[in-house]
Length: 198
Image (cartoon, rainbow, N blue to C red):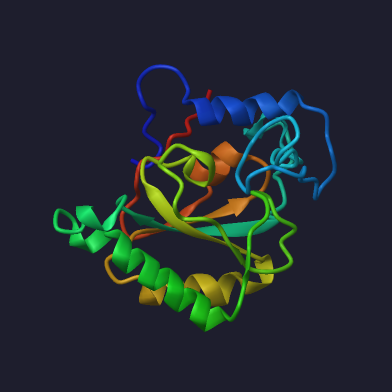
């Protein structure tokens, strides 16, 4: 199951995210100068839990609104892994990402994890698993942020063109744990996620 809990304590990325629940709110589009796209700290990506204190939804709260979506193309680290798993190698994943960019036109690089949901953007794909933009994952991903009004076209295209690649599509509600473990959609087989419920 994609929501299998790893043994031991919570991973450092999850701990950092949950720590942000007590951080001062800096504004819906706040992103301090010098922050990496996916850096989570007291001054970077401070809006990540907006509308969902602690990043975990509980049934006493109203269901959160979906602000945008992320599409993740799951792949193994580098092309040297391809002989062992050619169906999930980096070369094919980046070709799929390039075809997606070509289909949906020029897009900017994402500037923060929880963007404004107004336009498509692309995340860096070279972060190591468990770090920065690949923080929730045990593998690398090529990822895009998708506005709600482009969900059907972008997710439909990705599902029809994914080939052998497994795709995670998850909402961005502020409840990051639920977004990845409960409310996400998989095309292909689910991959393990580092998040788990406290």
